[in-house]
Length: 254
Image (cartoon, rainbow, N blue to C red; front, side, top):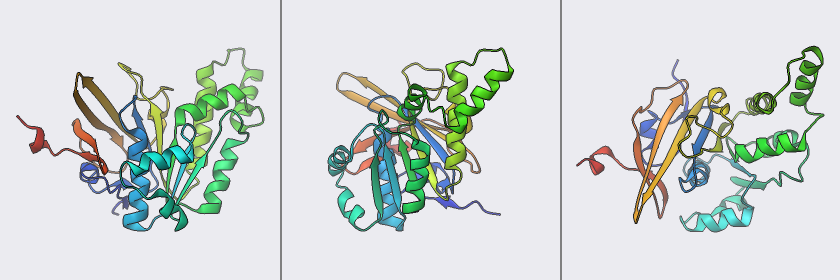
């Protein structure tokens, strides 16, 4: 049985994914500052709306709606126009003030019923849950039960892992193909800030940036993508006037 694919519409990326992202996959987009994580994710939603008529939900924990719209104008994206057509919805979460964030995300999904979802960023989201200590949340309840029956101390990483699994279980209830962003520290041996999410997501697209003087080089690697074959090599890409596009191999061969 053929796997149904969701096209990103990003030049070169669908080819690298042999047709697109498998439908309902949860994909981690990791990278450091300046790699274009948010740009790639918003472009995925914009293309879904404009090219395929699919609703997109962008949940931001860092940039507010006005900031995202302003950034989008640099690429010629009419975000407000797509909002008016009910094809795009941007929701800003103040992670310091928000309670029951997981339930709110689920409520947003059920009210809007998007086919594409972006959570930007997973790093801020999980950090806020750790800080706020959502004691009534199922993930924390599981940790509390474990603490009561085991003398082994529960580390922050164990709590983070419980939270991430709980988040993934919630996301997998959605009939949507999801992108999550995470910070990738420079020279890291892992693919996320939490060192966990790359293992529990269906796919990982890692973005890298190298700037030397006036020369900028950006590259991506599709580290994994369940249910499909994909390009294994590092691929150069650019952030131009229309957003991200991958550079064909023959264009940068010497």
